[in-house]
Every structure is written in C-alpha cells, then in structure tokens.
Amino acid sequence: MLGNFSYCNPTKLYFGKKSLNYLNDELSKYGKNVVLIYGGGSIKKNGIYDAVTALLKENGKNVTEISGVMPNPTVAKLHEGIQIARAHKADLLLAVGGGSVCDYSKAVSVSVHCEEEPWEKYFVRFEEPSCEIVPVGCVLTMVGTGSEMNAGAVISNLATQEKFAFHHSFPQFSILDPEATFSLPPFQVACGIADTFVHVMEQYLTVTGVSPLMDRWAEGILQTLIEIAPKIRANQHDYDQMANFMLCATMGLNGFIAMGVPQDWATHMIGHELTALHGVTHGQTLVVVLPALMSVMREQKKGKILQYGERVFGIREGSEDERIDRTIRATEEFFRSLGLATRLHELQIGQDTIDEIVRRFNERGSRLGEAGNITGDVTRRILELCK
Ligand code: NZQ
Ligand code: ZN
Image 1 (cartoon, rainbow, N blue to C red):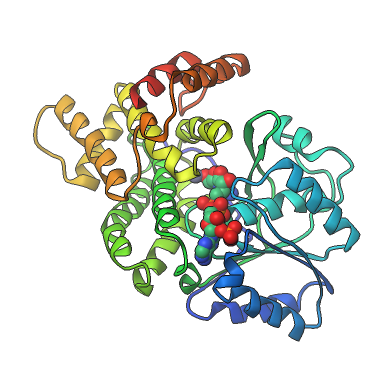
Image 2 (cartoon, protein in one colour):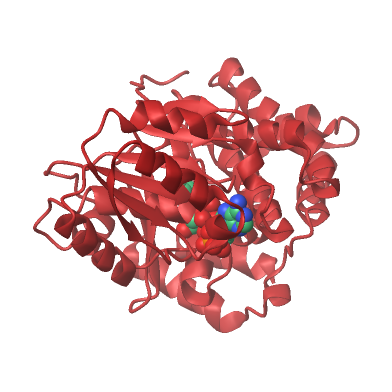
C-alpha cells in the first residue's frame, strides 16, 4: 500500500543553457553580504568563477570567499567556513561546484547561528537546527548527488574516520547549466552516473506492489541512464545527453520518487564507510556494494529484482533464480561499462576493512535496509561477496 507522506521541495530550479544569467534575479532577493564557496579550483579553469564574480559585482554585493572545499568535505573545513561566514555576517551562501561544495554550504548554513558544535549536534546526535538558517544558493558544476534540490549534506570527520549525513537545509535556488559540466574529468562523470543510478535503486529496489506510478518513475530514470551513459562516455560535450543526465540526477534524489514508498539506503551507508576509511570516491563505492547487496538480499527483494530485471534490462527468460542472477550480472556489467571497478580488491581494500566496518555496524547496532535487517553480520556477508 502506498504510504502516507507529506512533500515539500522549496528549491527553485533554473535549468538550461546560459541559466547562470538567472543569478541576477536571485541575488536581488538577498542582502549585500555574500559568501562565495567553491572547491579546489576547477571553476577558475572553466570560466565559471569569472562569470559568477562578475554577476556578484554587477549586483553590488560585498563578497568574501571560502575556497578549497575538498571532495568529501571535512569537519575541520566546516569550522573554518563557519568562522568566515560569521565574520562576514553572511546573507547568502553561494555554492559553486559539485555535491561536496553544495553539501558543505548547507552544513555552514545551519551552523553560522548555532552555538553548539555542528558535527556532534547534526551528524552524531541527528538533531534538528534550532537556529536561523542562512540561505544557500547553488550553481551546480558536477552531476550525481542531487544535493542541488535536497536537504542533505554529508560531512567527513578525518579524526574519527567517519562520514555522516543530515537532511536539514534545502538550497533556496539552484542553477543547472549542463555546459558547466563539460570540463568534468570522465571518472567523475562515471561516478556521477553511478551515484544517480544507485540513488534510484535505493528508493526502488525494495518490495513490489506499493506504487506502480513510483515504480515507473524510478524505472524511467534507470532506463534513461542506461540509454545515455554510453553516449555521454563517447562525447561528454553532447549538450542533450548531459542535460538529460542532469535532470535524472536531480529527479533521482529530490524526494519525488520517494513519495509513499519504502527505502533501503544500506548501499550508501556501507559505501560511506569505504570513503571514510579509504577516501574512495562516493559513486565508486556504491557500485562495489550494490550487486553484492542484491545477491545477499535476493530472497527479500526477489519480486522487485525480477520486476527490475524484466522492465529495465528486458530479462524475461529462465527460472526466477536464473533471472535474478542475470539481473545482478547486468547491473554489475552496467557499472563496469562506466569504467568503474566493482570489486574491493581492485581498490586495494582488504579483509581488515571488512572487519572494521562490521565492527562499527555492530557497535552502532546498525539495522539498515527497508526491513531494518541489514545488521553487522549481514553486512559482513555483503562485503565478503564484494572482494
Ligand atoms: O574541487 P574542484 O576543483 O571544483 O573539483 C571537483 C572535485 O575534484 C571536480 N569538479 C566539479 N565540477 C567540475 C569539476 N572538475 C571539472 N569541471 C567541473 N565542472 O569534481 C570533483 C568531485 O566533486 P564533488 O563535489 O566531490 O563530487 P560530487 O558532486 O559527487 O559530491 C560528492 C559528495 O556529495 C555527497 C558525497 O558523499 C560526497 O561527499 N553526497 C551528497 C548527497 C546529498 N547531498 O544528497 C547524496 C549523495 O549520496 C552523496 O552522499
Ligand atoms: Zn549517493
């Protein structure tokens, strides 16, 4: 049965060629003090920094910068950003970059006016913000996370080697120009496609019969990704393909396909551990875990794996077991077609990491997945299959 839900997504999207011009409309809505937040410098090489700073100047903004936001942004960097945003009396945090920059800006947004230590409050104790949230705007340059239209932010703690998320801060607006992604390294594009694919799977591959409509939205995104991935890999400057990929990613994690349906998210939770312990890029972690998770959870997820196999990969022949095997193989092959590794040994990750993740999950009493039955011990079975 379709579950009860409430849904509100307040992020205003501007999508398409030259959509950066809409930044003018948005800037006029906020006060003078803008903090421009970006990563390690890609926006300086592809001209986006110049374009954004010119618009900020035209609008008479008083701008300070936080630069060097790293992939998988850290708590230490978050503390630095909070100080800068406070000192500048920020009226707007303008994130220009990928999911890391966008997430980071959201983490700053709920921390500027908060007395408490943000890592402990939001990421360890999972408390709601009880302070004013500084508005965030996003100019997206990397595709995959969906951070441009959701309230999520993921922060890494290097001291404890942990990576946790909160869901408290939507961007007020996000500007998505597919041409801004043309300069991405192919590996990042592959990881972005994988990330989007797995976001959809986490909200889809649970049980059957809840919502034919939500199922078909999810299957539509998965089929679109499978269709466009080879074209994007052949030519990353193909505007149409990148535009459709961008829309898939946004629709994949803006809450839309999650309405009233159960969700899994165990692949992400296990993947975050691989990033926290080894710095593996987010999308890359997911494609290692998902096929193995499907194998271990094949009885519970049987109906949905069969439906997914049939509707997404056209797998109709053979016994149920054969079709499930072929569907899992097709999933892994799709990930390999992106040029990504799908086994732990390819990432030089060994038994000690498996043991450590299982130890952590047991210690936390983790019960992941749509049925809350992916415990530390089940996680061990999944990770053993990833070797
Ligand atoms: O730092 P710069 O120099 O900008 O380089 C970045 C970075 O090295 C580069 N890049 C981005 N746009 C570019 C570009 N290079 C050339 N041209 C461009 N146009 O790409 C690299 C990766 O960027 P990053 O922002 O780290 O990638 P992504 O968007 O995949 O974000 C990953 C982070 O998002 C979190 C992940 O855990 C990870 O921390 N996630 C956030 C989610 C959310 N908010 O809902 C959900 C996801 O599941 C995910 O967990
Ligand atoms: Zn993800």
